[in-house]
Amino acid sequence: MYNKPIIVFEGIEGSGKTTHLKNITSYLKQRKVKYVSLREPGGSKNSELIRKIILNKKSDLHIFSDLLLYLAARNENINKIIKKNYKKKIILIDRFVDSTIAYQHYGMGINLNLINSINKYLIKDINIDFTFLNTVDLKRLKMRLKKRRNLNKYDKFKVSFYKKVQKGFIKLSKKKKNYTIIDSNKDINLNKKIILNKINKLIFKR
Image 1 (cartoon, rainbow, N blue to C red):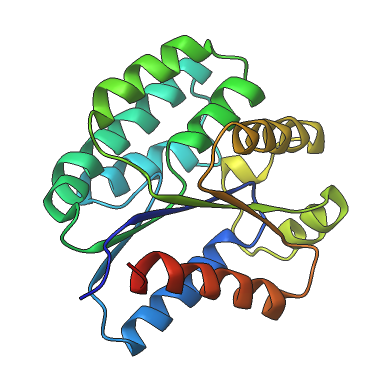
Image 2 (cartoon, one colour):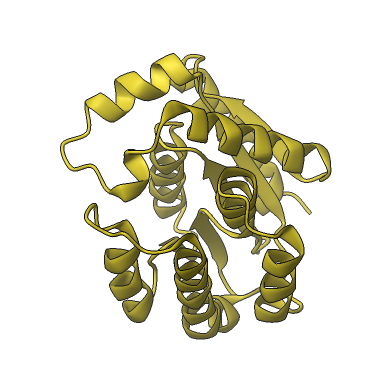
């Protein structure tokens, strides 16, 4: 038997969070451990449709419309995937509640109480067990974004925006216990080892 936590990978664009999440899914497959992996925006069928609207590089949605679409996608995931698998399988999520706060509040200035109220209503008694926050310096961020073949709307903001968002993530991390910051400027294999060690403690130790 093993534990079945919800583990979230957070961070700005180019921080390596998605790469690390993929490494963990490969590891869990090798261990024949049951898990569910999803991303935000996206995940469930309807959430993936919403993702296309949000990330369309030609999108000129108002920031409040953007927020509501993110939350609609999250609601679909909660009701179609997360509730069904909560405490039954390990749930890995590429971005979740803290991304909404970091981007929509710290980055775009939307009222924090409003964001928190809606998230609280959607999530109810679902608890996040652990979060890996991936950070990256802005020079490296720009280099990584230049290498991307297909840029979406959120890959094309000014560097000052990403700086605000990352500072927001770090503020959030200081308020919570079950949070580890992964410095993506360091060697990727070192970070992979740090994450795997923590994953083993979360899942296989009681």
